Image 1: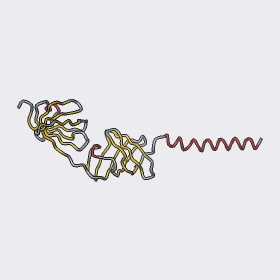
Image 2: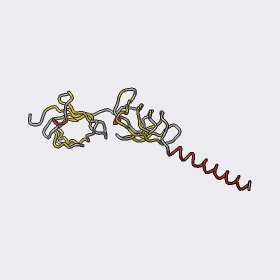
Image 3: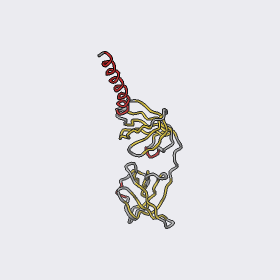
Image 4: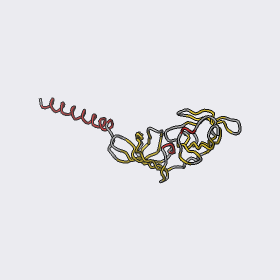
Length: 180
């Protein structure tokens, strides 16, 4: 009888020992900070390979503060391969992202708007070519360099679009209104 109880107790302890690490992995991370190398990033999440080799994903929320090389930046400036520190809450929401890496130089293309949609703008360039840029919530609109509304961007308007390689437009500056 004692042997049987001892075996049952051993089996229960072994099951609890196996279940505890699995429960810890499935639960939310404790509030804190993680350091690592950015594996991927988009407007909704950042994925880090942290120092112990684990891959961790954090949600980007509206209150997330992003810094690149100690300067205020947008999440579009962060690239895979950058070293980053993510301060997060217990639900894995990124509160602060501090990254170190080379900022990608912005390019400005000038042309005439041929079409504009909620998510894209197409320009006819002076050289005769055509180019389309993605637009997102981070795209700012200006008129002669001053903050403006998106409504001025219409087919026929002369604009300057500032963008980074393979990223949505950061600024659309209307230089001359359509029909003016």
